[in-house]
Length: 443
Image (cartoon, rainbow, N blue to C red; front, side):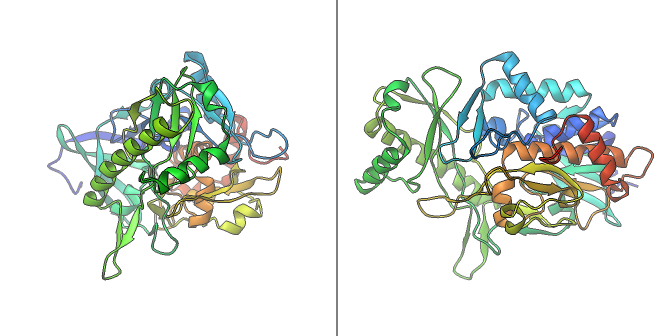
C-alpha cells in the first residue's frame, strides 16, 4: 500500500527520470527507445536544464589537442543534428583550450528536446518537484511530487536521478557528498547575453588583453569578482553570450557549519546577487571593451548556473587520477577528454589537461547508486570526486551518461524487477554500440 494513499496517483511507469537537463532528457529518450514506459519530471516550464536555462554551448564532444577528435556521438549528436535542422549551429574553439564547443540557439534547443523526448514515446511533466521518496529495502517504489494541482504520487519500477542536485537520492536517504564538505565547492554563475555588439571590433583584442581590461576595471571600482570571464559569438548576428559572474556556492558560518546554496534562503540570495553582478559586468563591457559601446543586455539566465551540489556515492567513484591518467574501464559507457575545469573562489579558474589525444573512460558503475537497488544517476551529481567531476560534468558527457543510465534502467525492467545490477554491463554496452556510441578510442 502507498505511503500516500490519500494522494492522487498519476500512474506507474517502467522508468521515471527526475530532471530533464542534458542527462535526464537523453536518459528519457534512451529508455523509451528500449520500449519502456517513461515519465520525465522537470521543475522548469521547459526541458533542458542548464542546457536551455543557463547555457548555449555543448562542450565535451571533441577532445582538445593537436588533432580533431570526436569522443561522443549517438543520441547526443542527434541533438546537434536536430538543432541544425532548425537554425545555424556554430562549432568554435574554447577560449581556454577546452576543445571545440558547439554553440546553439537555446530557444531552439527547448523545442528539440521536446520533439526528441516525446517522439521517443516518453511522457513529460513540467512544473513538478520531487518532495519525498518511498523506499523499501533499497528499492524506490514511489515518489511524491509537488505540482500546480497539488501533491501527486508516481510509482516507478526503476528510476534515473538526473536532477543535478541528487534530489531523489537525498529524499531516499542514499549516500552522497555535499560539495564543499571535503574539497572547496565550485562557484555559481548567472549568464547573460548582449546584443548590438560590433563583432569585428570585438575581435581586435585577444583573451589576454580582455583580461587586462577586466583587471584594470576591477582596480577602478567595478565590482568584478571574477577576472577571467569570457564572452563568445552566437548563431544570432550581433549577439554575444557570457560566462563571467561568480558567487560562492558554499560557505561556513561562525560555528563551522556548511551552508550550501541548496538551502532555500541561500539559493534565493544567490539568484538575486547573480543578476546584480550581471548588470555590473554588462556595464564593464559597454564602458571598456571594444565592440560593446552600443550594446545592450538582452537576456539573463532563467536560473543561476550550478556546477556541483551533491555528488552521489556510486558503486565506483571516479577520481582525479582516473581522469588525468585517461584510465580505461571494462564497463565504460562513454569517454571524456575535457580538462579538469575548477571554478574556485577568487578571480581565476584552475585547468588541468589530459595527455594530447587521450580520453578517460566513464564506468557504468559510477552511475549505479551504491545504496539503492533500482536507481541510476546521471549528470553532474554522478559518483566522482570534486576534481573528476570538474572534468566529466561537460554536457556531452552528461548526455552520454544519460543515454547509458536510461538504457540500463529500461533493460532492468525488461522481464526483471528493476534491479539495475542484474543488467550485464556488456548488454548495456552492446545497445550503446549499436546506437553509434563511442566507447573507446580504439573502436
